[in-house]
Length: 227
Image 1 (tube, rainbow, N blue to C red):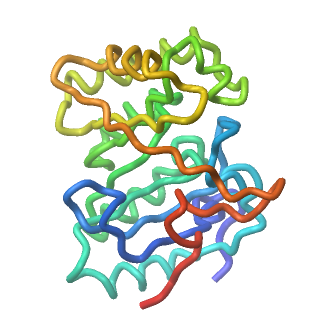
Image 2 (tube, rainbow, N blue to C red; image 1 turned 90 degrees about the vertical axis):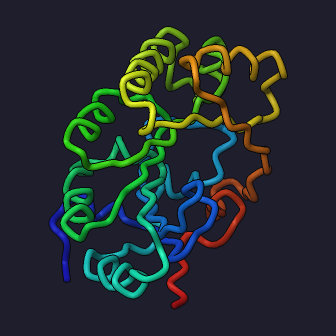
């Protein structure tokens, strides 16, 4: 089946059929979408994010079959990337999953809060995992000069406002990459609304040879369709 040009299905480039670590307390299938609005120098999935054509595309029919085979073992679907909110026609994928009655958790860097607000309002995402990369001051360094400290503050403050309104729909995490100090981590933690905690993730250096294959957070290959 040939997907329409520039449809969301053109961006579906990876899957972990069964994961116990991508959605806290929920076994899930994880889908990986290519492309990203940032160029973080510590990115594990840089091929997926910046050069997804190197990775095999997964069709809508493959996704539907995979999920149907796991209906007894998973709670829902995690959408990650790359940066899902940067993908054209993302809503088409989410509507498809909602039609199939799958709850969705979506990972985001929080830099496109208008997309997050829309998806939340439409009831297409049950939970958002938002990466708070560090102190606002270090966002240019952390994002590969794609986000200014002013933009980082504005975008995340909008996300935090949504989290205050819908506390069950958000959680926040930070990966302690080498340039972050303990003070940076505590500063980032102080940004969060009252009642939220910042989940700290250990940094694992990406296996990189200029443009080597991404390693999906050092867990397993991008495409793993083992039944």
